[in-house]
Length: 309
Image 1: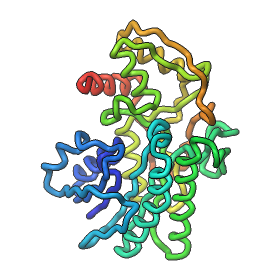
Image 2 (image 1 turned 60 degrees about the vertical axis):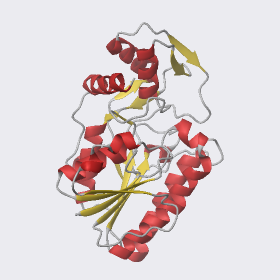
Image 3 (image 1 turned 30 degrees about the vertical axis):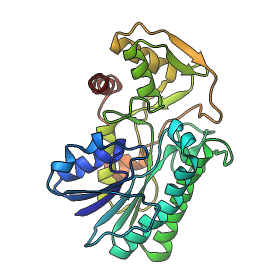
Image 4 (image 1 turned 180 degrees about the vertical axis):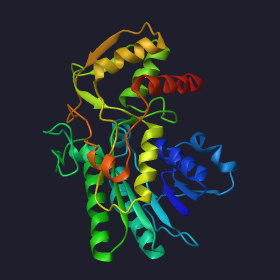
């Protein structure tokens, strides 16, 4: 297939582009580097079958030649990023999704939207299944990301229902691994950077809030299986193993052999207290489930962070 990936220089976009090339597909990557990095795709730039375009996908989007799939992964994705870039976050979720959908419609291509577990907000049920409508504050500081993704899902389903397009609606839960930025702002890179530099490890709230962490190779495998499926409705992809943030901080401190002390700071507004995917649909429809255990994945990620530091 010939596949367009927006956000190709980001954490997930770079891994996805690499995986697609490895499967024999050709990839056109687009990124404006607002949060992506050329470092993530340096090896890809030399590979046959990969073409890169520096571009803002909220503008008119046109690509010559046929396309078999458009995978829309462009967006700031960490709290630090979408609080720093609130309007670009909303624009890429709304205008960027609209432009990418229009291109997919023109090319009669499959369209995939990289949505997020953040559509569930601060959930009132645990684990979260795809039929749950969520508990989102639309005017809070996280609303720019949550509502951008919720709108992107609604627009994608409108194109599916009205135009009969093949769509893939991917709800990504917390993911970690190489190619994350050191100062990303999310728990794993924060804790690792602080531990490796000997700085205090900052845990927000009392540390009892939970996350479910999926290693990036597992996530990419799930994404690829969803792309090749015929499923148009939302599918959660994530690791259902739940851990508290304090347990995660302790694990990273132990694995890095850091002498950093753990300190506590106030919980940010609207920060979710629990996060755990129900992956029943992914298991049934895609025959997918994660394989990489947390300790193994953390060790691989620590090795990468050491090379970057």
